[in-house]
Image 1: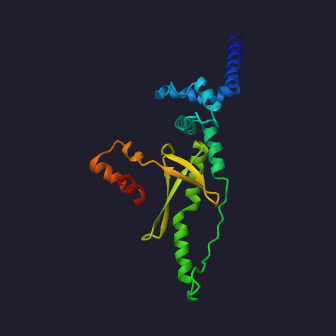
Image 2: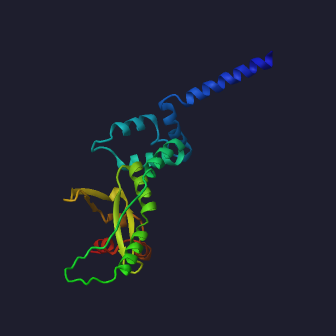
Image 3: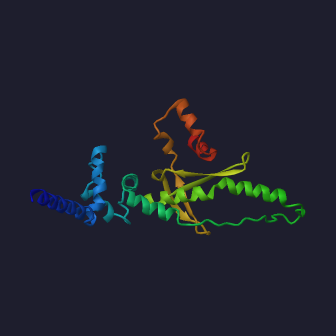
Length: 214
C-alpha cells in the first residue's frame, strides 16, 4: 500500500510539473531564466522582457537589446528556433533570367556563351542558401542591411550583412527599395589598430574602406 501511495504522489508531482511547464507565459520566460548561468541576469528578466515588448514600435526601443534577446532565445529554445526556421525556409525559390540587348547596334551573335555566363553568375548568388539566411536574421532582429559586391574575376555576387547598429534608413527609392546610411565608425569600434585593422579591412568592399580612410 505504501509503495502504491508513493507512486500516486510521484505521478501527481509529475503532472504538476508538466502543467507548470506549459502554463502560458511561464514557459516562454523559462528559457530566459537559463541566462543566469551565462551571467545575463540583468537582461533576461520578466520586467525587462515586458519592457522590451511594450517598447516595440517606439523610438525608445533598444534594437541591440532586442537582438540579444532574440538570438539567445533562438539558441536555447527549440520551439522558438523551429518557428523562425520554418518561416525562413518555407519558400520554394523560382527565378528566371534572360539576356536583353542593351545596345541597338549589338550583333545577333550566338547566345550560348551569354547564357553560360549568366548561369554562372546566378549560381554565384546562392539564392537557395543566402535568402533563408537573410530571412532568419530578419525574423530574429527585425531589420537586415545588405551590401552586394560584384567580383568580376570569379563572376559571382557576394551578399554582405552589415551590422545594424551602424546602419540608418534614410529614404525609399522610386523602386520601393530602402536606402540606408552606414557609419564607418564601425571600423574604429572593432578595437583593432595598425596592421590588424588593415587586414580586417581587406574583407570589406573597397567603397566602404575608401570612405573610412577619407
